Length: 585
Image 1 (cartoon, rainbow, N blue to C red):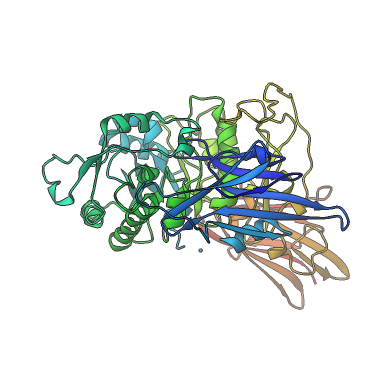
Image 2 (image 1 turned 90 degrees about the vertical axis):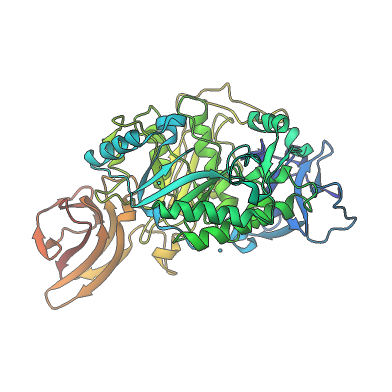
């Protein structure tokens, strides 16, 4: 295992704390880098030039070998390279880690690491798992969908878990089910399944063991032959299509890394299954309709060429109070890495829950699909209507929601002082969320990290700025001076500034604004704003408009002079609209 020295940096590691999932860990030197680190970002200061730059380490796949990083007590970084098969060996490695540096950490990730996204991302959904767990049944599904629709937030995709309406997805594991395929079951002979016993890597065993893996090591996994796996997926998916299923959620993906012995190793084995899965999904389903889950190893991440959505954290646990803030922080930090490859999936949540608003606000700026797992009749429609439009669509932000640059190396969960700020972009605005994740829980595997989690501050203070939003120049233009008005123009000798905010009753208000056009004629200066949804539209305007119209019909508006805030009501029943705001020419 080759090594390099790592001292006097602020660092962010994304590492696997159990076989399925990654979490972040912050530190100051090499000894703070955990075993099974799959992304490492360092912040360095140039004292002479007063500048900051970033160094990125990405352990990758080198042929049939997979690499990861880990720190030593001497502050050296080790590269751990493994095949997962004793028969697959090598003495030299040339492409096991990718290293890059730059002045912008987000551009650095983008340059160092693109997919067709399924349509279900833009629609509100419901998942049966937390509603029913293993007791899912047809009548319960009907009641759940009816309950959401009658409340004014219709679910347009459905995930039938362990067993998505515009879209219906069904769950299965990468090997069929948790324990694979029963080799002795009727009709399974053609898949050449054999009972194999998983072998976990030392890196996995050094962290949190997983109960499901422990049981599979004892009882075995019905392992389908790689030469037959496409046939299995094709048979399964073609049947699902015949039953009007639109896509699949594929779970338990990292299991493949433990079954590579005799098949050319973990990378080769995983790659064969991933390619067969994507080939079958492409053949049988439209719109790349697959959600991947329990696949946070680089074997799966780098072997998936087409799959567009991947769960970005451990499960949502509604009964575990300590996990609520951890869930939000985990997804945001993991999205730094995963968001350059896939659309990170934030998982389901309960709308009728003490932490529901916390989860809802995070998903509104996460750039992800939005779905709940409410039990039928157990909904908070006031909250859901801030996420879901009456037609069942959601106002999805453009990019994966990620921590702001000034948060990257601060621990928002256990340091007792740092807020978590998450940024994103809409078509004509930026969006910024501020979350207090301190005091509720702690990260797993924290033996060597300073932990102030006992500190439970009553409140935290911080600052926000337009500069926290990395891509704001996309809508502000190259000549942006820092003012937060999208349009600035002269009307009748008066300089007017105007910024459309969007539907102010929604969490992601600016997601409703789809196009803005400025026109001028002999009598009026006019802004035409196109968007979707209904409710109260708000905008910053330095002047009182002459008149406002919605879909060519003049409507009353309210203008607060002190706040320079304009509101117009978009009537319900309008899935799309055009607002004209006119000023004196």
